Length: 521
Length: 95
Image 1 (cartoon, one colour):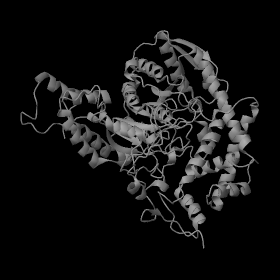
Image 2 (cartoon, chains in turn orange, green):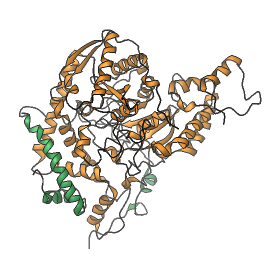
Image 3 (cartoon, helix red, strand yellow):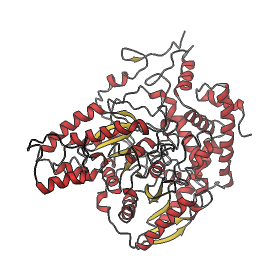
Image 4 (tube, helix red, strand yellow):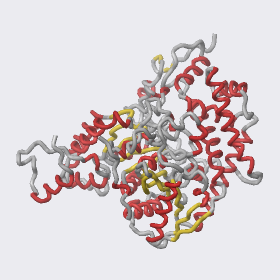
């Protein structure tokens, strides 16, 4: 089929101001709509240059074309998405609807990480134990997206129960990195970040417990934001570590990221840890200017273990900000080296408690050969969970068990206070902190999966934001000599998402990294 | 050694996990090196540091005790591995 670039297509309309359909030219050429961002598609839809059905078909075709290579999706919501697109086209035709106020995501195909509940669809957490689980209700974030006219195009792959940094622990096979399919996409939201890099959805949601949005965003060259703990409702997010989990947007650019944040943020009576405070209009903070903004560079994030190429790209970004008028200064976060130990004690303790519910009684997989109730529990878990999940349940159960609680769990909660205080001090002086998102670019599939501790150590730069509950964003800032993306992380104080968005937006407006696309068939 | 195979068996029992002999051996080795790494925290004096169980200063969150219909019984029950009408079925517990 003939392919006409979107730009030419739009020009054709603009120049001739004609409607091809009315002229009897029914066959509209296949357009590469799937490559566009939320704000670009919204403009085309509202000026009636394209229909929602065309957008959805374009994305579904792209998925069909490329996902057998990437394996980013667990479920594709094909039929229902087309039906919903047809309904939305009717709404779009109604001129009385004020799209500025309502339906800000009308017709936008969004992918949802498969640990977030979507009514009537499977939510598997990439685990055998939930492989047949159908969500009885929508997560609050999903309801909010649907209320704004978004289309849930599918559910994305992840490390089993979001436990991993490579999307290799999925029961449904690992996801591949679109920049080099022999490399992992990072994790645990590797499905969501891969499909955005490969243009298999316009935007996506992920979840971030220790870096699970930011690290794969960095590996796949997309934008990902972990909001402040309590900014976004966790109702309907399958719990991993409840004091650390947060849902956040994964997008092609910072503008899309802010549009999604505006929709998903806010208080929810169904999540008592969500915070009742007004949601800013994040779009208003998309300002291309960092003059006078104080950016702190934590020196502990540039020590041993940081890849030379990653460091070089981060240093270049710092220089750019300096040239743009930001005030740059070094800062110390002295407890950084304790973040990994603290995190893996707390996250596994919470996980061991949260995952106790998968016993084969009320939902999910149940082992069918057993002698009694206890045997049923034990065999269900034995066959339902993968190795990494079992390892974390063991670790968490151990640190919570009698005799070890004080030495591990309580100790870690105290060190968490010290880590949090480091940030509080830093943010008295700085607007944002700038660090690498991950110490290395994407590693090869199979390279680290057999050494869990080595895998944990890679989370060094992302864990602290979860322990302190602060917002943090990853944005592309360059490529390695192998052509793999490198990410830059921006952190701010509690509920200061607008600061990271503004600084990230300025970076994006003054660089070209987000425009580069992976070479795919 | 931070952890022995015997302790791994005990923790597995607490977690209601059945492990194969191979898993027991592997987990003993892996948990040992992870726990050894976590011993790093003992370098810090935290005697006077309060724990942070929660990052935001939230107190108990209350709401009105209102009766609402959630209409979800059918959907909830449809995920049951085994059911008897509107009850979850489990193997016999009491003789």
